[in-house]
Length: 105
Image 1 (cartoon, rainbow, N blue to C red):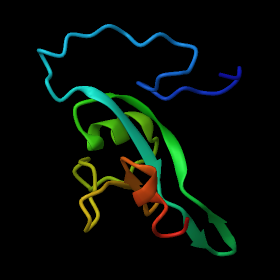
Image 2 (image 1 turned 180 degrees about the vertical axis):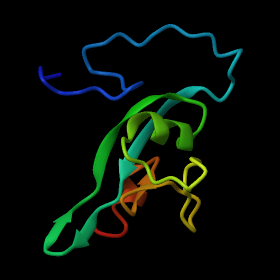
Image 3 (image 1 turned 45 degrees about the vertical axis):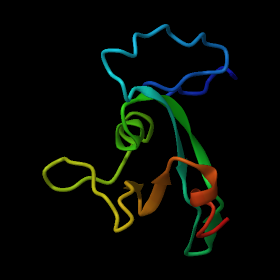
C-alpha cells in the first residue's frame, strides 16, 4: 500500500498479515467487503467504489468500521434504506460489486 494513505479502522492492507483469530467465540465473524454504489448529481458522477474490507460479524458492522460519515438516525443508530442496506451521503453500501453497480455502473 502506498504511503500517505489512511487505512480505516479494521481495514486489512495488502502488506499486512491477517491476524489469527478464534472463530468459536464469534461464529459470524469473517472478512466482509464494502462497496458504495455510484451516483450522478449536479454535474458530478461516479461508478461503484470499493471501500475496503474488515473482520466483522455483519455487513452493517463492516460498514460502520470502514465508512466514515455513514448515515445515522437521530439516536445514533445506522440508518437503513428500503433495501435494508446502510448508506453514506445517500449512496447505498453493499457487500458485493454487482449490486453496487446496478444504479450507476
